[in-house]
Length: 415
Image (tube, rainbow, N blue to C red; front, side):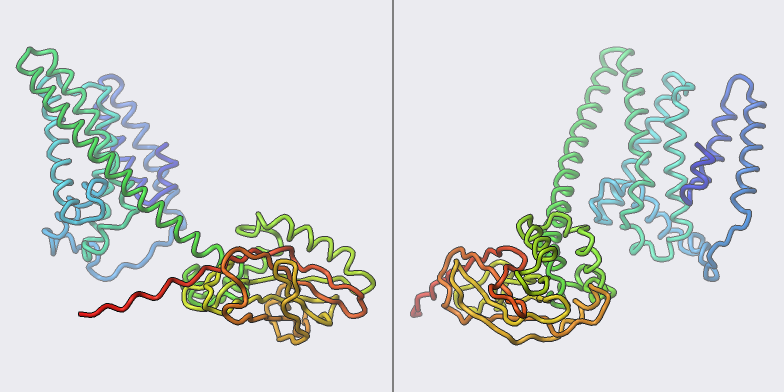
């Protein structure tokens, strides 16, 4: 386990000196276990340093703890209480001080009541591992402790301090319970206090986890439609997915769509069946049709895919190819009635990237004026007429559109 820890995470080396301490506490064959552990420690360190390439630290970087000991102490206390502070530095400082004091009291109580036994050693080792790991972080991060102390990755470093403390407190409570009524009352009061604190912490953890989960769910609900309609999504939406380069999402999402990965894995079955049918058999005597309805909805304030306000235009857009050329015409059908047709197409470079070859202008767009569609649910279909075909064929299945009635104007009031 110590060898695996050494090569698994940066502070894994801390396991070795703690192991030396445990070996020195052995009552039998102490010299043998110290020799074996020290030899394994030396061999592992030699393997660790073989070919090691570490980063270069600024001058005096690791000596900040000596120049600013007060900041180093604050950072240590805050990290020790990191799991209880909910990201608030004052609460982390207070929690760290309480946890460390209670830990020392538990060890001192056990030492005086019955002495430390061998079955206490693993818990002391876990406590020392977290305590030493926190010190390692402070050694290299106390130069900007307020910025570094709230990082979530430090939560796992300190987790064994409260865990080991709870076990050691429980064992001290057992000893107190055996020593008379007065000590039983003290042990019961301490247990009640600990249970109250644990209940509060469990509630705070659940509440914080619920908030984080709700935020993640909201983010996914807002971004998944952006990915599904990456060809027409605005830059801001794509940038929320990948801050450094939103256009990278637009280019690479075509690969996900092609191989039905990520949000495209559960595409509409009817649309997929229609696409396969068109790709395999075409539309009558003409060439095979391929296409996609990328967006159906409103383009006004708050517009979203699949919904539109009754006072804003309704937009339907996508692309279609009939073999290697644009179709002869595109038709928009709403609730079984043809409402618009077009033979005008514009360039869609993203479609060419999707197929890996140049394609002619194949993009199309319909804009229905406000009020043309009544409030309520509508079924939209897009049909394409391939060159030489007698009948238009369906493109990518049906689309649902919900037209939301506009809110009534507020009544005028007089002061």
